[in-house]
Length: 107
Image (cartoon, rainbow, N blue to C red; front, side):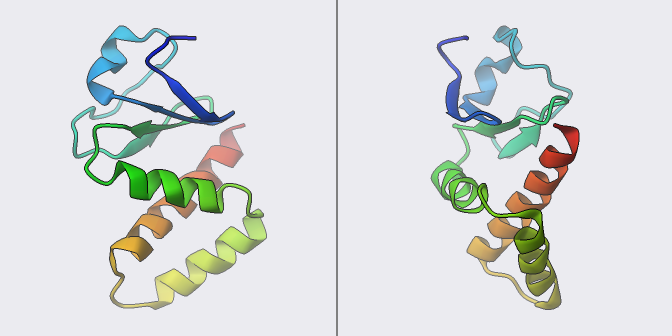
């Protein structure tokens, strides 16, 4: 495994997106700018951008929600979708839940 990849969990990695073009273990078709906070690789692995200005918030959200069942994630997503205005923490949770559900479908 490339030393620039931090394996947080089996299907949750983090890396500086500016290094991805030089890392053979990660295939990507994504925008690798600092404004892209994470992406889903074709094998279901979620790759977080260590260069993102909200990296720690996103990482914490993934760690908090990762072990939840799909039923619990879908329930939380429905609650978030009913709200008209989401704060930053809720927007992050919404995005994290969506990508976790999609990741599980690919594995």
